Length: 157
Image 1: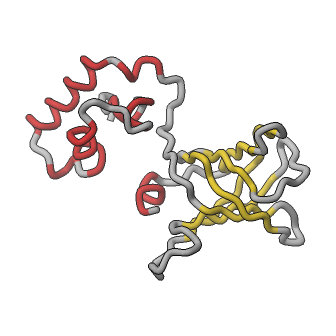
Image 2: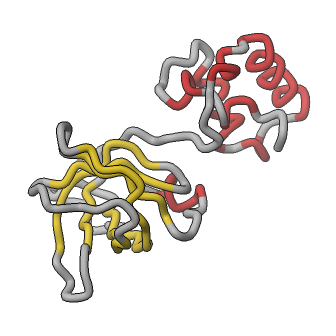
């Protein structure tokens, strides 16, 4: 949908949209809205114009997902948390720092619930990725997925 401005809006992604409850409905359940309601949301977003400053194509979710990073063929696993994630990549902060390298291939296991949660319905998404950026100072690693995650996966988490 070319005119789904909220998909590129950094303010909506950061939960700073002044009309977020209305936009949430258009984003998450557009098939339940009438064409006039969808038109209203599109006009609000179009007039708002806050999305114009967004440089990224994919919306980022800032939710502290648990993640396991498998760094080599032996299955070395590093636990950590995701700082933000989109359909094409994630920014990860490992619990224990390692010697990461740009262009290093890794496997990720993204978990849907906190470790102490009593909910047994945990979703685990496994995805291959390549390290694109290493930030030694902040102990963060940017990973680009080798296959795009479908938005339904991220919303399910």
